[in-house]
Amino acid sequence: MKWFLMSVAAFTLIACAPPPASSPAERAARSAAAFEVTATRCAQHAGGYGDAIAMQKEAQSRYATARKLGATEQQIAEQKKIVLNAVTSAEFLAGSNDACKSLVSHAAKAASQT
Image (cartoon, rainbow, N blue to C red; front, side, top):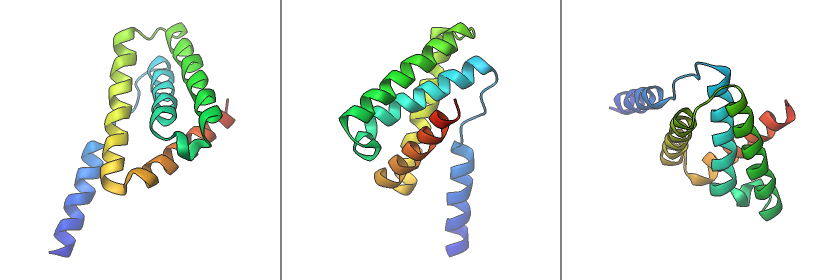
C-alpha cells in the first residue's frame, strides 16, 4: 500500500509538471512570472520589503524582454498561469515554506546568471 501511495504521488508530480517553454519569448515570460510570484507570495523568505521590490522590478524587466522577443499578452498570461499552477502544486505537496524557499533559491540563481 505504501508503494502504491508513493507511486500515485510521483505520478501526480510528473503529471503536474509544466511543459517546457517553446520559445525564448515564452522562457522570458515564464521567468518574469516566477519572479513576480516569488515577490508576491514569498517576500518573507526573500528578505522582506526591499527585496520584494527588487524582485518586482526584475519581473517587469523580464516581461519587457519577453515582449521585445515577441511575446504577446496572451502568451504572458499563459506563462503566469503555468507558474502559478506549479507554485500551487508545490505548496500543496511540500508546504508553503518549502515551496517559497525553493522559489527564492531559483530566483537568486536566475538573477545571478543574467
